[in-house]
Length: 166
Image (tube, rainbow, N blue to C red):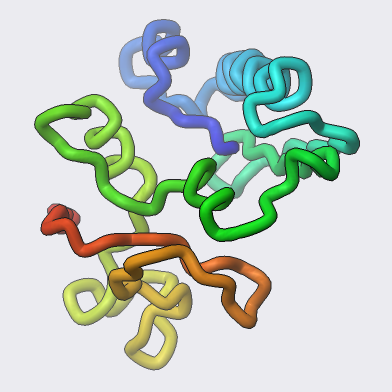
């Protein structure tokens, strides 16, 4: 979980000319509030299942914002067993902009990699002219296990695409 400098709780408290990273006291309090809400959902409300083990750490990124890593181990009956279980929890597809405009805007403004590649060869992810993170990803009709221990998530070719503005 990464602190979003555009959270309304942060923007509302900034003085004219200030940026979020000018106010570590503010960003850390807002981040802590939101982290605690997420941890409550994960650990007490069991949104992913019953957590039997959990740990989290918070660190500060170079640009001055807090970032948290959370590890939970779910009970045996709640662990993902197959690709359908992954699809129940993880979505790597763009939502329909007309039916979910707010979520579409959040995903396209905060959660997509890029721009990189030929249109932005100086991007930090570029190594020898290729994106080191493997983007753009190919369409995938169904989630599959991969040899890297990370699944390749379903990303159906439904005609929805997004191009980063330069």
